[in-house]
Image (cartoon, rainbow, N blue to C red):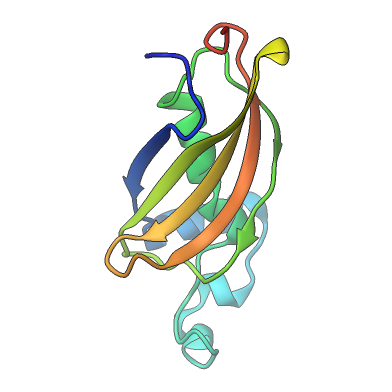
Length: 138
């Protein structure tokens, strides 16, 4: 894989299942009914269960840890703005865009976005700063 350059884009398609949400609720301890109770969620503004915020951005960790320069990747910082809810059974695309490069520190700042595939709606946006002494050498 070539060294990242400003405006490089990497995309990854994904979705979440109800079973994954229940597993995340058990592991995290976040059993808020908006995430795990269909009967409760039907009566909310969203009309159905929503994916946990932190679990929704776990796709960023998956990509950085296994798909995009994974060897020696270290997450330095990450933020996320949750624009619209994410649901199970819906196809999404995670988009990673190189915003800034810090060659003296072997770091790259990425723009992270989650887009609903069918509608193109932005669901989550944020940034992540990663270090990689093996792949980020210019």
